[in-house]
Amino acid sequence: MSGRRVLVAGDLMLDEFIWGKVSRISPEAPVPVVAVDRETFYPGGAANVARNLHQFTNRTSVLGLAGEDAAGTRLRELLAAGGIGTDGVVNRAGPTTVKTRIIARTQQVVRVDRELAEPAGPAQRKALLSALDAALPQTDGVILEDYGKGFFDEEMSSEIIRRARAAGCVVAVDPNPGNPLAWRGATVVKPNRHEAFAAAGLPWSEPVAHPLEDKQLLQVGETLLAKWDADQLLITLSELGMMLFTKDGGRHHTPTRAREVFDVSGAGDTAIALYTLALCAGATPVEASEIANHASGVVVGKLGTATLTPAELLASFENHAR
Image (tube, rainbow, N blue to C red; front, side, top):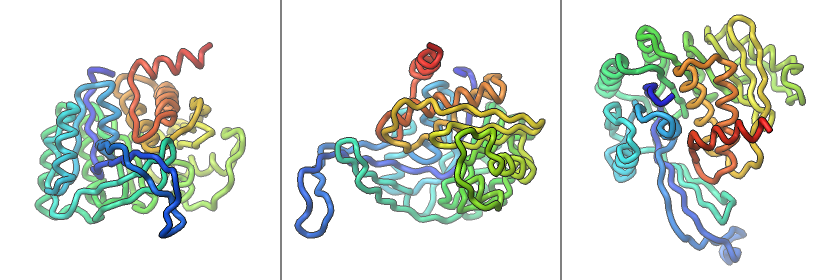
């Protein structure tokens, strides 16, 4: 994986964590009072996918919009300090999206979102596609990370997929249910179970213990492979792991590898990052799904939008092999 080059396109955000302790309830309202100890900041949204990738390859970059405000400045600085390429970060007129999570000891108390969901203007769109074209000759994989904050519309998504596939890249999509785009022609699309049922237009059904026997899930998988014209479909199933569908009719279930869940923030980012990077490094889809599942199992055992290291990933495989 270390020599692979991956570009992450999508909604860039700044993740802010306010850490503290709760010892009393407010006299003003029935809510906890958090005594703040510290604050931490991380690249979020599509930038968190790049952050996950950078633990395994130092040839990672992002494509997206950020405001010319304090949050945008901090985001650019964090990306640059983390060795993530920012040539594809284009200025936007509005504010940078910020997600603030308040944590009391190990429990998330509340999340505050500050955002302006709007698409790129004509000049920004031209700059983004120019940056994409400049990066593609040195890129092995492109991840489209849709958080529904306005970056992707039908034109932007189809252009990125078309240009990246023409350049011979692995193309992975992490869709958003609130932004139902065509997403046609990608190598792999990775929804979670709720997103998959919604995208397939099929009525929700509760999961069954053995996903390979879940008839409704299997129907959803076949429907989405055809709808999105993807080579592979990877559906994340929370505590049941992941289900992989391939265009040749293959179905593979990998059970969850999480030992203990503290925080699911960013788990989907880790899954799409490691799945894509594994494919770029020559893994089969089944191997890539196992790698992505182990990686997600590690990060949900950490607080915050966490990443994992190659050593932690290897340790997860070793622990489950015993």
